[in-house]
Image 1 (cartoon, one colour):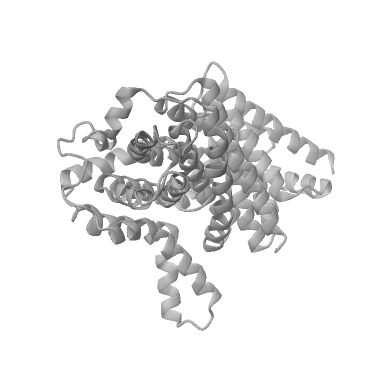
Image 2 (cartoon, rainbow, N blue to C red; image 1 turned 90 degrees about the vertical axis):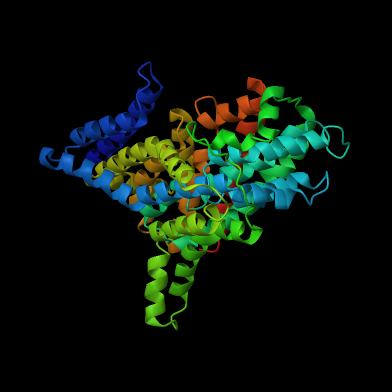
Length: 470
């Protein structure tokens, strides 16, 4: 490699160190501001023409928001509608109520897996807390579950939710990877699900069976009463809403499941259309339109609104308040995504991305391992899985352009798997789990941190296994 290439690599390393320092220093700079500042400094240091730096920042931020931002907003609204209408509760109880004591953790993993398709980790866990607490109370004196029933049920729920959140579109992390690496969306969903199923099994019910007898976890009684009482669902409604969160009429189970799966099915149909050349041209164009992420998520939102939420008895005013609240909750994520897009564009326009490609090619590093490791270290260091994904995607985008379609999709999954590992005290999800279940710091580490790290490692191993087919 040339001296110039080494210089660009040094700028990248210093940029990442600066990003970590700005987010974790006493300043506690917001990741969006830190990403913007680092992007600007990297562009100047790499010698990008001054008149093009602002264009790089604007193009990168605008491009990623156009690809992912609107889809993320629709996804947040969809998840809130499903929660407020009782659709997710219906799915969860349908799965869990038919299980015996020994099989309950497996059924809980199944419920969390389905619910985790459209919902963020934190939202999905809050939705599942009433179910986890109420079922755990039934199991407290049952000898079929050894150790803490709360840990036995929470472990598979955490494993399923974080696996879907990190590795499978239409979650924002994988969508960022699909957009930045130009991966095939349907193929990424397919391989993501293939990687997710054994990952959830190992990190969920299997690990839960081992760790539950070793942790004496007892959530606060007041919190348990709040989540298992008649108005437990009120925890997810806006404070100014006077209507009860629990719907006046039950949601039919079939419609509840359909509302969760509509966006994913539309995206997968688009991929199937690409693989079947005999399809009529008009049908192919229609599936291409409805299978694009933003349109698929929008149709899923409309389906949930008119087929599930309104017929269930949730009032229009309550729906509008819930949708507005759901958008406020993802505003920070949107800004981080924009900052990550700007950083990625600077890496490309300044030539740093090409330098990384040259160095990795010369070192013969496995691109899946490299993507996983970058996302893991950045997520652990900054406390943000999104930062880990956007930065790793930007660094590896030039390398992905030379890979096969399957490898590129597997790279998206590997990066997402890396982003959920080593989830510790600088992650919001860690504290949500710790406080919700009344855990000590050590108990939260042995449960939540280890679960997500198992998900991360298993996800990487599955991508490496599937890469043998590429």
